[in-house]
Image (cartoon, rainbow, N blue to C red; front, side, top):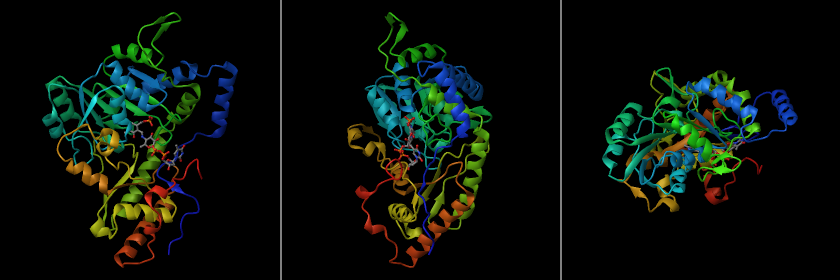
Length: 400
Ligand code: T4K
């Protein structure tokens, strides 16, 4: 019998800078008494991100969801947008808030991003753009999507919420497509507590996005467009500034964790690791997704998920159910039966990964999975998944 962890091991856990550094930054904020509305730290954070991403066309927001909503609005996208059902629901919500109709097409089986052939087949006269997602930070099929977008005169947007720090062929992923949105939420590889960033090809968008996130104000007496409030504040920028300098170190720690999981899980039947990114990709190891093969493991994905909870390991099923299965999107256009997305959503489990996760904890998580698997194969009644129903589940967090 393997002992459960004493404390919950959650799928993500925010990286934090040394507390004294944050306290020192707070003193500056206190002295200036300037908390939001394009403060000094937000300006500095933007400058440092421009250097990090290699593009001046960059705008900061209070979170990634509002950044994407504003992007779609500011770019004037209307009609139908071809997108993926295999994502966090915010990708689609941003379309909905702009009265754009999502057209869901299937994903490819290797990295779970939009399948370019399916995208091309779904284009109609009403299509105005493609909204693809770099799921788990793995780059989409960049070249193919770019070719399709250019050929059909469509805008190409990336939801790069998971992909901060990723490079392809030495170029920041922020420089592909017409626009990319990054999330700096606390659960991400890099964060500013909450936060979002847009990077874009056309410098004209800068003005538009800056108006839209600040009520459309030109000056005290003129409003040039009906904007909203989506400004990043100084506390967020402080967190971001202090963490940005640790990017390499945080990615390196995640790389080691990813490698250990791969070594240890390779021998467990029924656990399929997602392909490593191509050699040209500098990956950020944002998530640790595995596919569960029910027959080989002797348990369904959900049974494994519930069993792990008994050991205080809180994996998550990112991304299940498919967005197109949520009640509010059932009337949307769905092309085909989405066989790949459906299969992946029913098998996927994302295991805990964060830069401070100790390698011996990774070993223990893998030992637990091995133990559950061998128990299942022996038909051990000790497996306790039937005692909790999904609606009774409480995730650890603020509640605990
Ligand atoms: N597009 C995509 C593809 C996205 O994945 C997301 C967000 C967005 C767009 C929208 O970006 P933002 O507007 O969020 O910037 C979490 C995140 O809240 C969300 O940002 C993220 N994707 C999504 C994949 O994951 P939940 O509802 O699963 O989070 P929650 O509260 O259950 O947290 C997950 C685990 O992290 C918890 O079990 C415990 C741990 N945790 C969480 C927080 C907030 C901590 O240890 N400390 C914390 O402060 O959505």
